[in-house]
Image 1 (cartoon, rainbow, N blue to C red):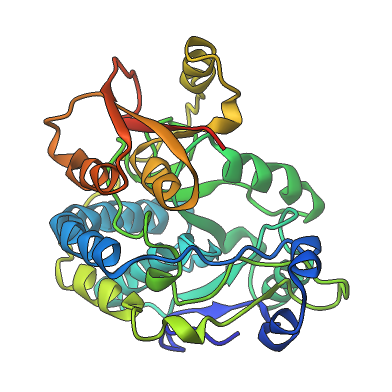
Image 2: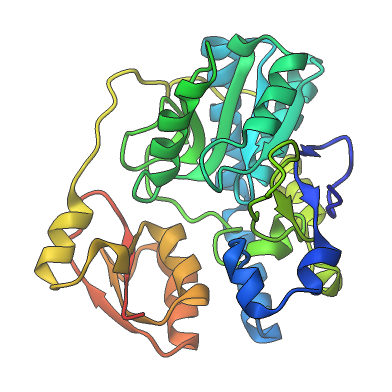
Length: 328
């Protein structure tokens, strides 16, 4: 599958269905699960880029921590399998860190979990590598949906480890993570323009093919996927450690508590800085709850909310720094 990334950074196991999707009606697109890319104004995109610069260093440190955990506790020959789309830049950065420091040839793939783990893609990977070396990678945990999806569908593949490695996990539900806090990750509110300008995956009728996606050529002038990973790589600290590894996983119910408090369904809530930032672009958000308006980690989401004229309310959050409540 074509993307704006360098070929040596990632092998994206998706079928290019750009021509097919472009020839479909909106109804036909909806049937295969295709989602149109949300249009970003220049003002919005420039604000995201500007604010994202603040978090390059902390992203680089978290990547180093995650990479060291995988090298120490998973495998020195780890095979990275990123979740399309937000997992791709994290997988690329972990790959670069390990290759730069340990001089290892690290394989990195990206797959769809549109309806669970794409069987065709996983069969392809397992035919080439030791199943014990395979590690799923994503950016952050929100409600833990990705982690649960992988855990459920991994049962269909003998010997496959369903654990998930992420950059940020404030819920303590992943085995490996760069930091167990809710931190701002620049790609969260930007979507395709920082994840290789590949669309969200679509389901293929032909199960012998990888799930599909389109290449968003019209976004090439706005894309900075390569620029972003290059900037983070320049900030790598190769003295990071593997202290974030945990086996005592737990899951919290804060989302359910807040849903009950505000009399909304849990589907209306996007928890964590990154899920909330993404919701500002994708959904009609009524309120952003923040733990502390003066928290530097929240400068991006507060400015984005102000740009969209969304109400911001301080609230005594336990595990998240911020979350959004939608009305759509």
